[in-house]
Amino acid sequence: MMRIVIGVGSARETFPAVKQIDLLYRLDEVVLAHGAKVEATQGYDELREAAMESGRRHIEECRALLSTDIPSIRTLCDVQDPSSFILDTAATVKADVIVMGTRDLNRLAEVFIGSVSHRVLVHSTVPTLVVKGAARPVSKVLMAVEGPDDAARLQTWLMAHPFKNPVSLTVLSVVSSPPVTSEHGMLRQDPAYDERTLQARQIVNEIVKALDGPNFTASADVHGGDPAGIICEVGKGYDLIVVSSHGRKGVRRFLLGSVSEDIVHRADRSVFVVR
Image 1 (spheres, rainbow, N blue to C red):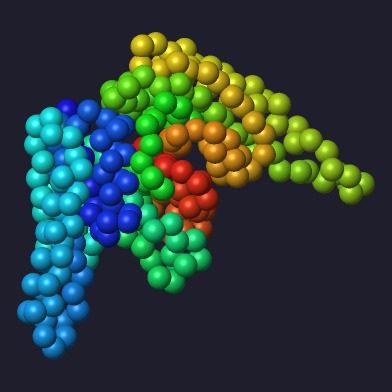
Image 2 (cartoon, rainbow, N blue to C red; image 1 turned 60 degrees about the horizontal axis):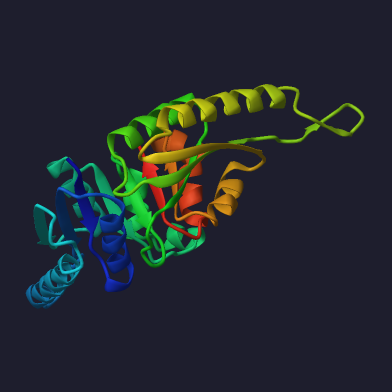
């Protein structure tokens, strides 16, 4: 059973998202959710009705793009903060995945302006697919893992929710290798780097062994360097990047940041964040 909530915004960002999720999975239930934010000013009733009418129109345009063999397609439209409405809808219907298009604002712009897709990504407790650019058939997938917890989470998700069509899957681990300065001011290798690399190879090889089969033709890859940068660079040769989120919250999340969010912002293609 695959239950999806699609956040409906403008046609430019939502149409590719609708098409992409339909290409990616066999869908059992789709909920198209549109929240319209209307300020309480003079002429509120007229503005509210106009916003609702526009929202219903956008929803029906998205509905027309979905496959006709999906058993259940529901539509929800209300005057609420869009990101909150999408998150609340996902919680209410017990969604397996939230799907969002994006205006692809840069990270600095999102700090000051904000975006619905960014807020949903930050606060979602369920897997979130952020679609960038045009929808594309998915035949090559890059799955990035950081450690054993990531590996277990991603492996469990993929085994329980295989894609609509078989894919070539590369399991990538990037081992951070910050330079270490000796007492003579010379750069030397982190003494634990080789051990971390060995552990990374063991993790990716175990995932490949578990997933390789009719749904996935799996292979392993290990790199050293900046995780987000390398994942985004390698990801340019793939149709989709899949990562895991640690789900940090509050002050700890603010201070430590999130590699998965960094990848979503920097990647030039769609990113699926599994939680």
